[in-house]
Length: 389
Image 1 (cartoon, one colour):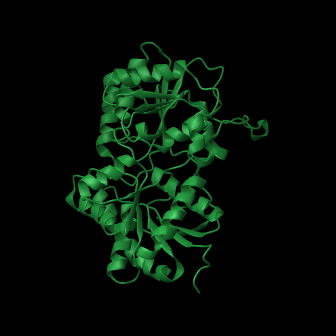
Image 2 (cartoon, one colour; image 1 turned 120 degrees about the vertical axis):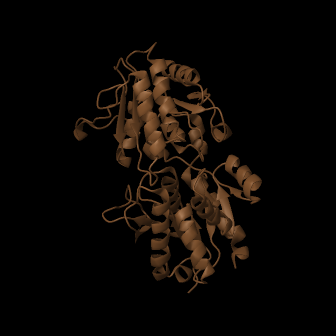
C-alpha cells in the first residue's frame, strides 16, 4: 500500500552512533520530520555494544559493523562492505519513499545497491568533504556524492565548492539548534545534586571550551598555543577539550597537540591548564556550555559550525574563524572573529569574548530551528519526488 499523501516514509542514514555534527543533524532532522507527521527511520552502523548517543523519538535501526580500524582506509572498506551486505535485508525499496544519506560510507553502500537494482534513486547531504591523501578514500568520497540523484548542502560554501570542483548543483539546507535543550534557563535543580559542570559565576579563572576533540580541521593545536598567549594577561585561563569520538585516527593532530604542550610548557590533565574531557553525554552538553566562559572554534574547515549555535543558545560567547561558513550565518553580540592561522588573533578574540559575557541567548538562534529545517526538507522531498522515478 502506498503511503498517504500527507505522510512520507523516510529513511535517513548516517555514519556513526557518536555525537558528531553530521550525526546530530541526522537525529535532530529525523525527530523534526517525525513531529511533522512522517514516519522516519534512522539507520546507523554500530559496532558490538554501541548504541545511539541519546534516545530518539523516531525509529532507530542499528546496522552491525566491525569495530573501527585505526587505519582510515581499512575502516572505510570494512564498513562499506558490511553495509552493502546488511542493507538488502532491510527491504529499503518496499519500506520507504525517501532514502537520504548524510555521509560517504552509507552513500557508497546505497550507490552499490542502486547499481544492483535493489533500490531506486536516493538523496545525499554533504556537510563537508575531507581532503584525503589516500586516492581510494577520495574515490569513495566522490562516488558517495556523484551517485546521488539530488544533493543538499548545509552551507553556501560547500554548495559553491561542489559546483566548482565536481560540476554538481546542490540545494541549500541548514542546521538548527534545539533551543529547548540549549537555551539558558533555570539552574539545575538542587535535587540533582552536585554536577561537575557547575554554572559559571563566582569563579576567578576563566574557562575556554573547544568541542570536537583533537583534530586538524578543528585547529586544536593552535587553540592550545593561543591559550598560552592569553595566559600572559589572564594567567589562570584554562582550556577544556570535549568530544573526539571520530572514526578517523587524526594521528598528526595528536602529534601537533603534544608539540604545542611541549613548546608552551602547558600541562594536559585534570585540573591542568589544558584538560581533554573525552566524549560528553548529550544530557550534560548544555551544562558544559554554560560552565565555559567562551567557546573557542578557530576551525580551519567546517560544514556549518553547529557547536557555535549551541553555545550561543546557552548564552556563551564564541570565538570563530573569520571565514565561511561562519560568516554566512553568525553575527551580532556574542560572536568574536579571529584569523585561525594567527595565534595572537585567536588569543585577542578570546580575551574580548571573556571581557563581554552574554546575558541572554543570541537572538540569531531563533532563526535556526529544526522544525524550519524539517519543513525545508519536506518541501524538497515533495517538489522533487517526481524526478526520482
